[in-house]
Length: 197
Image (cartoon, rainbow, N blue to C red):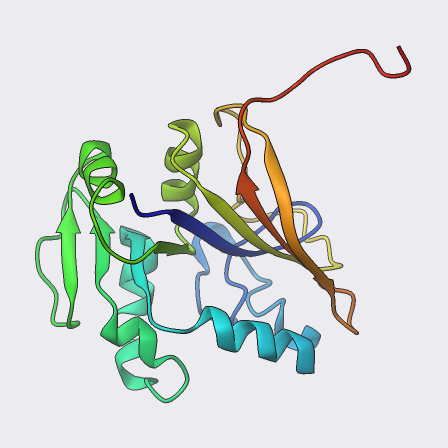
């Protein structure tokens, strides 16, 4: 079985929209695009270099439409995204000139993909897709980069409706700029009790 790994840059209030630049995703009138730009350092760069190694990818349609014109022109920065297979969940798109792109239509297609043989599948961007995966308990690992900033608006990583789930922290770092990098793997059901009992 392949693992589905969500990689996301989020603010303290959970916003994940347009971390990379002002024009990346202005939907909903979002005006803070590029909010991660001032937080890079050597440790962050080292971790990102590892995460940008070739993989397979699962993307929502909106993220795909933002990325498809951009990444083929920037292979020097992220060659893996061009070489890896990109599975795109869409009801409307069926073809693309971006190499190694496969369109899928349903949650059942995602489950079939997860149960197939192959490398792990990374999910970048794709807020609505991530919420669908969380609702159906299909996220095996979360790799979060939590930035010391609050934006108050924008697309969020978590919304109501996710399947309750416990995770185990498997790796963590704090950069010199205060970004918390935390990797979590799925660890069974939520356990409840009475504090202090």
